[in-house]
Length: 364
Image 1 (spheres, helix red, strand yellow):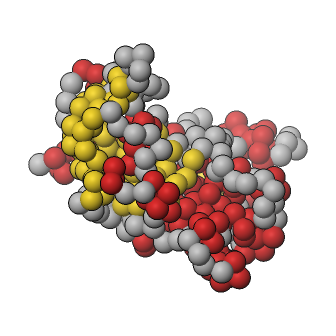
Image 2 (spheres, helix red, strand yellow):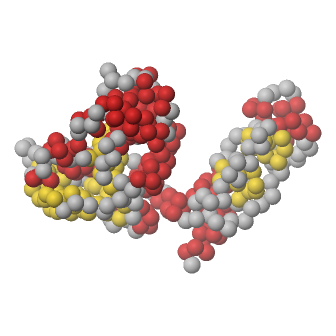
Image 3 (cartoon, rainbow, N blue to C red):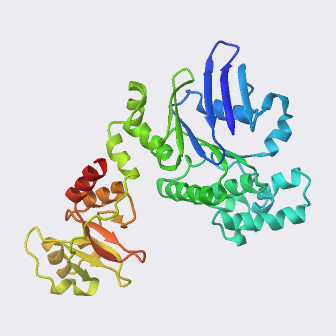
């Protein structure tokens, strides 16, 4: 457990970065510190491993006041992941991952062998172990950074905006990966971000920091969205917090409506009237996109399938949330969100009205 008790950080020029912080991070949870730039979230996290020393107050880890612990020893027992991975460019991936175990006295040979297993755990091919950081993609580098932090199996992991330097697709993959790892490892994680969507997606609890380093609210994500503590929190979360809250509502039992489906090879035989839509599937049975009467005519003139289909519409799986179901329905040009099975093949369509009805029932 990590506990802040009246912790304040004030710099010599009088600037207060963190103001009288009282907060407890329970063991085995992923807690997110979120807020605008300059609100003290990163400063608060860096005080945990004494990269920054508090001006006053007490910060304890597992009941021990960290001010009494040697900083080097403290840091060797805490994993640390930063933006852009922070890998050592002159060392191969395997030696980057083995860094902390070697510093703790483990033989390099043993540390390297263990590093291969950690690379696999974070979803990387062990063949990448012999490469240098510059030979990896941004997403791969971040995974190596996570592997390095996990290599010594620390009970605590600090993550300082680790996914902010990658593109949105890779960022979503990394978020999913950290949730998978946390489900397996149950570390005590403090994760810093400025992105409220990221915070509510991955956090067991979310701490919202405001101007002057003040903790404005510390709550479970669903309560943060449904009951913001004040105007600052409500404004920071944004006007669409009700929609975001749907991610905490299950979609089990949503009715599946019939879809008209055709394979790519069957487009020429379609006879559609205005306003009718058909879902086109790829050879493997997965959705390609929607096509209407205008698209069929365009296809018959020799244009490619890509030109004649509207590929809009996210996909939905029956065990997803109401948010994913509603997004699938709203983003589909036909008005029917495409539900797919575990193999990615369509099994029916979902209507936005059904999602709203399910929400009303869940609210009681």
